[in-house]
Image (cartoon, rainbow, N blue to C red):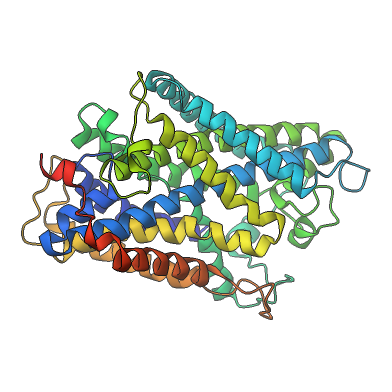
Amino acid sequence: MTFGWFVAGAFTMTVGLSMAEICSSFPTSGGLYYWSARLSGNRWSPFASWITGWFNIVGQWAVTTSVDFSLAQLIQVIILLSTGGNNGGGYLASKYVVIAFHAAILLSHALINSLPISWLSFFGQFAAAWNMLGVFVLMIAVPAVATERASAKFVFTHFNTDNSAGIHSNLYIFVLGLLMSQYTLTGYDASAHMTEETKNADRNGPIGIISAIGISIVVGWGYILGITFAVKDIPYLLSPDNEAGGYAIAEVFYLAFKSRYGSGVGGIVCLGVVAVAIYFCGMSSVTSNSRMVYAFSRDGAMPLSPVWHKVNKHEVPINAVWLSAFVSLCMALPSLGSLVAFQAMVSIATIGLYIAYALPIFFRVTLARKHFVPGPFNLGRYGVLVGWVAVLWVVTITVLFSLPVTYPVTKDTLNYTPVAVGGLFILVLTSWVVSARHWFKGPVTNLSG
């Protein structure tokens, strides 16, 4: 993780820089699908925007699902540790209770996102401050209170070959470590979707994209170092028999404080800090979802489009907000039957989103290479080179996310990401061939302006 974070971060920055350049030229809430329409030329415009838009919107719904469901699971672990722990008779919420947590979180996010934009701005600023301060507190406090700390050699050179996943290659472990980083570094297209509600959008939109990635790289690495210096026994952290029931990061926090003070209460408080940060992440994700739904339906691309692009007296796309929350709840329901099925669905969060990120960049460096008109923020003569690096990175991670993460491969350990993403592609393509190609003309409303 310690080195993979920078590898993923550096290539993610190329994606962000290319997106920022395009955002500066076309600041609109439609974001990615609008960019694809403008950059792919009249012949391909409707098809390009259709594919990009659906991968973007489904990817965003999957992100909200995975963020809020992970928060529900974290609440499950916090309750377990607070009531005695896995080995002390603590209460372990059932999968039905976890879904109820997930639904309650989504409900609160929908309510907050129904408020005027001034309130959302306040919550967004508070969330940014909480994340920054919270991370600094955790990266200092956790290793500081731990009575045993890992050596620098362990943190920077150790590969966990002693695992139950059947993976003993250092290179393979490093590659899988990139996935954690890449999943984390998503969602920065939110700045593009909020440009119609942003002053000086052609400058501030790109700044939002780049700063989101840059700050995450720096602060995130500090957080990773703080946690990994508090880690000693990796197999125990992953064991379902530990106090946190195998929830590794919770066990790190809990053990650090328990070893120092004889009680893990401090660790539970630290988990609370993380939980609040995840909560605000989910809130922002719903905001971004709703703006994308609003823009896509405004151009007639969604079923019942007139319903979803309505705004209330505060200029909030209220129906789009509640649709996004409802879909994210439905996408979590497979977890009741099979976590494998659920994991396959949320895998669309990363791959689906990054495919949507890469498509307009691909059109910018190919079909629009000679007639692209840059905005105030641009990469100059390096725009095409950075764009190609970004596209090739997305191709690479699409392959990496499809690799098995456990051996031997069985029906329960198979990585179903290619099935989920391929299924989405087939659905989107089929809907285009059968129906949409006859009536969808791209973002007509904006193009006519």
